[in-house]
Amino acid sequence: MTAKRRAKLLDLWRKQIRPIVIIITVVLALRSSVADWNDVPTQSMEPTLLVGDRIFVNRLAYDLKIPFTTWHIAEWSAPERGDIVVFFNPDDGKRMVKRIIGVPGDRIAMQGNRLLINGAPVPIQPQTAGPVGGDDLADPPPHAFATEQIGAASHAMMVQPSRRAMRSFDEVIVPAGEYFVMGDNRDNSRDSRFWGFVSREKVLGKALGVAFSLDHDAHHLPRWERFFRGIE
Image (cartoon, rainbow, N blue to C red; front, top):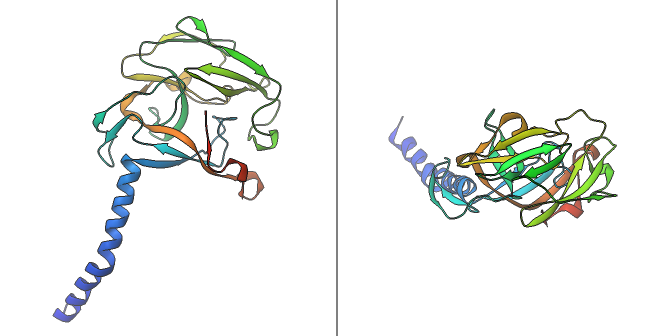
């Protein structure tokens, strides 16, 4: 390689390639440790989250991590009951979105789709209709909706009476540093009932709201009413 060609490549690196590399690295680092987004690929969180939603994730909700790792530099709070979190599935390592049902020390059981936390049934109020239209749900009817209170706030949940599902399990105690998570679509969610607890270090952040939503069954048209909306 001639000196002139080497000088041109060096100039290209300094003026064009290096700035782009720096920008990409900074953006990825911010996504890894500050703010992120996550697609909702399955119906396990219906009717709260729909297939095609893209959600905001606050990576600073509980701690500060070293970018591109799950190593914590500092922690200032812990996930609470009722939080919707993004985490790495302990079974296969994939990113998932679920609701925290039990925190360390909690006793969790289920009887006929009724949750019990520390021996007390979770308050639940049946609803005649869900918070979204039936056409927006990926799972076929019939659906039965309710409002459930886990933690300080209430949220919508859904069951599907005609589907075979795990609707009862014996009491388990959530170990220290672990969490019990479930989907709001109780009869179609693979969660802690199947693969156990989620460790604290695998929790990536807290879901804050829906950034935008595309209807996969309608040629990916926007669901405008779901843009920039919060979630409970």
